[in-house]
Structures are given as C-alpha cells and as structure tokens.
Image 1 (spheres, rainbow, N blue to C red):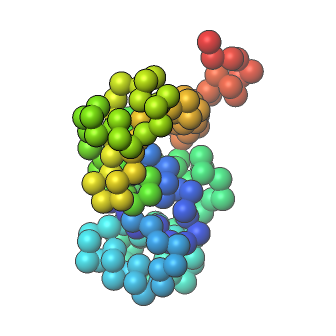
Image 2 (image 1 turned 60 degrees about the vertical axis):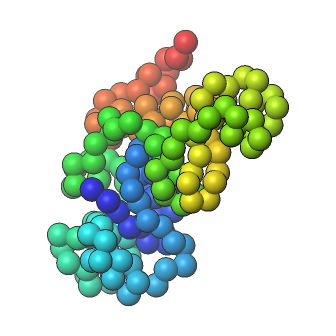
Length: 166
C-alpha cells in the first residue's frame, strides 16, 4: 500500500513515512499531477480537497475528513486497513526512500563526535544522504506512535488516563 498526499496533508505524509509507508508528498504539486502520479505509480491519493477527491477514481482516493493527525490515521485504519504495527523508522522522512544501515567508519565522517561516541547504529538515505541514529527525539516519537496507535484502535493510552510511563 503506497500513498500520495496533497499539500494539505504534509504532517500525515511524514507520519505515514515514520510508520514505514511509501508516501509521496510535494507541497507544490498541482491537482492534475497528483491524479497522474496516483494512477501511474498505483498510489492511493490522500486529500482534504473535495473537488480533487471527486475527480479521482473512488478506489484510488481517500478524502481525509479530519484536522487532527490521530483522527486522520484512525480514518486510514478504518478505510484502507492501515497497519500500525509495521516496523517504523525505515524510510527517509525527507525524500521517502528506504534507509540503509551504514558502517561505523562511514558514520564517523558524517555525524558529530558526541553522537558517534554515544550511538551504535546508523542509517542513511541513499538519495539525499541524510544520516539517521537513535537520538533523544526517538523516545518522543515512539511515545507519539504509541498514542496514535492507542487512539486509532480505540484504546485508552496511559497518558489519557493520567498515568505516567516509567
């Protein structure tokens, strides 16, 4: 399952990439280009634009009805069977390519010394050459993913019950 998101859905596109889904996104793409791309690349068009959704084949388009990311993802779980248990963090968040592991030697040249000393695994995007590692932001992203999963699947999350995760 692959997607193309319109300009109103940049945050959703980013989180679909975090979830491991191939999601094309160009904030400046014209509607006609999105329709052509969805057809040519066998992608599901995600849009908030009613007229654009009406022009797209029903089986190739989801009109996103909600403003909130959690509700948008819950809608995709219901409508297209989005799997929230896929392995996350496998795609470049910038250009959407699958990231690949790199050697310590290659990472040493590309990351700050402290990062190299404190991290053991590095990946990079083969297209834009962005380097990825498990920085402190990863914990926040994992927590956010847990919240999204809980809400999309209709289960209360610990933070919704006033609990703190230890």
